[in-house]
Image (cartoon, rainbow, N blue to C red; front, side, top):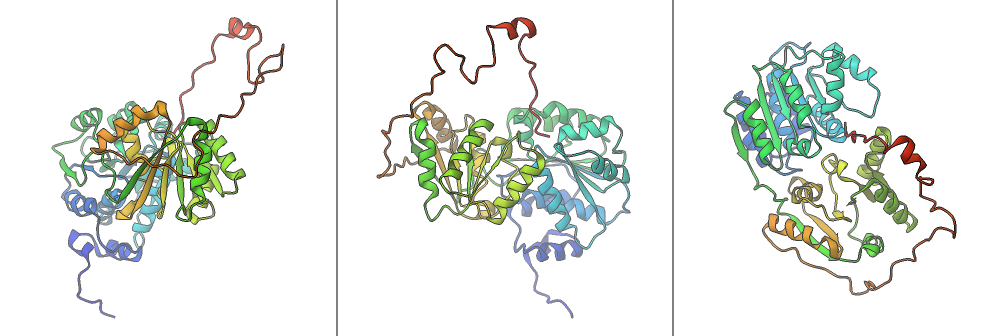
Length: 421
């Protein structure tokens, strides 16, 4: 049957008809602002710097023009590399790539830590068209000569500012130095700190700059609220809020892995379906937690910042900052998990008295004050629970030292780098 002559919004971007069928098959109705600006620019083979908030559709903005380029070539060699800061984001880019490449022979594979290397090695040695990777695990494969980038044509640095935050910039430079110089380089970020500007100048050639939202600004459809509360009452306040009818899909950010475990346990004991996600969880545990949250089996996902940009879940109704992020950009990344793709969402921040300075920094970055909210029926003066003291004459149960002998014999334990690969 002959297709209608009525043009759809994506038809004007210059993409191959095979890709347009995949786009509309996935339910895309119109390009987001970053897609509308970036796709035509990338199709001209220019280097591109794209600044847009999380949830703005950046993945399709670079994946679609890459697929358009590769459709015209014979498969068999790795021709595109996409670097991402977290395992979750790499896995999600792979899923997006698979959907957008439907109807083509283009193959992609995600490479990240936390899982075995055998399947990744097999895929890399067979020459997948697109590699999506976290920096640390990719360097492992490069050191073992599992990957051949001699035919590479496109490099994408996705969430480049997050890679900076996580300490991956030296790894990124090592990877870039090993790639062919004659390539197209695309850099996407929510913010552009000076270090990323410096990186772009050293690895890109006269890039086109595209900014569809001001830096340090979350989507305008997010409603922001601050709940002043003593530190010891944060969990009680969280439990009270989770009982509201509008709390359908809630992402809670905490500062530490231990706190994530504790808050998840306490919220679960209060009767809520809770999953948790942090760096000490195995990759399979993280994937299971995310799948349960995405499907709605878990109402609440409690996570550390390792997940701030690795969670691509539609319909998150609320982001709750149990702990105030100390850096304004982290606030932007966290709350950007709600109100994705121009939807509405709520961002709630619990602030203890000692965290007021951090809130003021966030308000300064946002350019506005955040409304303070209190619950009329919540007891903000409740005392903290009694402290548990060690038995008289005995050591504290958490103490790991005995009369200083461990320190004198072994010295301090070695420092370990956090593995976000």
